[in-house]
Length: 290
Image (cartoon, rainbow, N blue to C red):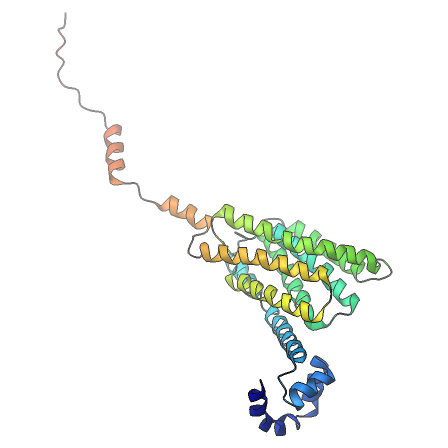
């Protein structure tokens, strides 16, 4: 580390003369003390500041990736006009969990870098859930879902309606919901023998994001409810990722049905069918008449 620190010293001329907007942004992210240590003094030997900087960087990266993490899933649904392989129950549970967690984090004043992706993924989840209901012929349920969601927003974010103690209990339940939301999706993939319209990009980004969130939560948020939720979520995201790899080239249930319909009848069966359909000519009778 000392050798690295010595090698970085010539760069101090640049880091000490950064534009004010960049300096202010850096201070707002890692604080005055760590900004001075890591940027102005270029001292990577301070492990606490280094871990904080890594945590902030991961958090910002997760938020950036989450802004598009489910866009491929939305595109697949719209292009295929099918909800095959996607569990409505899974998205319902996950959306409920994210809404509660978003309210809990905001009302506790936690750093945005530790939960920002929750808001972005929540919005994409709403779109996907509405599409799944619509493509499965349940458009009226989609309208009911949006109305229930709006009611939940008003209730959870209003301190006059819901106090923090009750919200803490709900957050504990949200962790369970978040974990439980993966189970219907895992079951749907197993039952169909394929991943259907499920997006690989979404699955693997979820896996990486949940692992990163364990680290950022340990560094920046002293809340076991949130930590345990991310640990359990990572375990089930790992199962989903394993299913995605296992069923990578497996055709969907719809495709398998078409393959069965188009399957040619073996020649031997055709021959036997023709012979059974054509009556054999009768030979002369050997029975004595009269």
